[in-house]
Image (cartoon, rainbow, N blue to C red):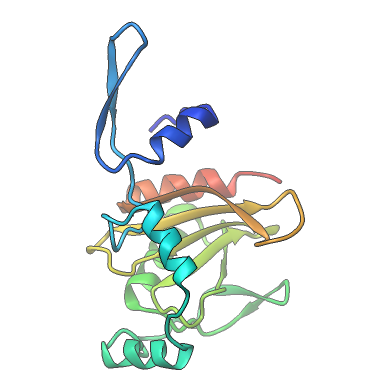
Length: 199
């Protein structure tokens, strides 16, 4: 699929939309439709204002309570372990047993089969999340694709493409692109194009 970079002014208008719209030229000619992706894939109706309100409200649960809830819900479990996945340990490639949900292990196997076993390193910044993993450029782990299967239908994925942040402060990366419910073919093309990005 071809991508078009839009001006920031248009992006700020589109990001406030919650339902599909028809895009027209100033003279009235229809040019297509735009369907916004939800801010929160697992809660598609949430608005930016509601997210801001929740952040300002504070509160929440302790990590111990969250882990207990995940365990009670059956989402914190020990799936089959793949001990043949390359990961980075302190910047140096190393072999480590990857304790992830079978859906994550399967998509890593399929990506390696499609892109080649040396096309990426598995970088696991989310070892407490069994449904998430990162794949990164072998020569620059700052160019990373986060992949999650949490709350997705079979063969669908959440993908967030990350690049290093230019300026200091805050999180060390910037989100280049984020999509939810992509199929495996789309995932392969997104990861392939992203990992080709040199910083």
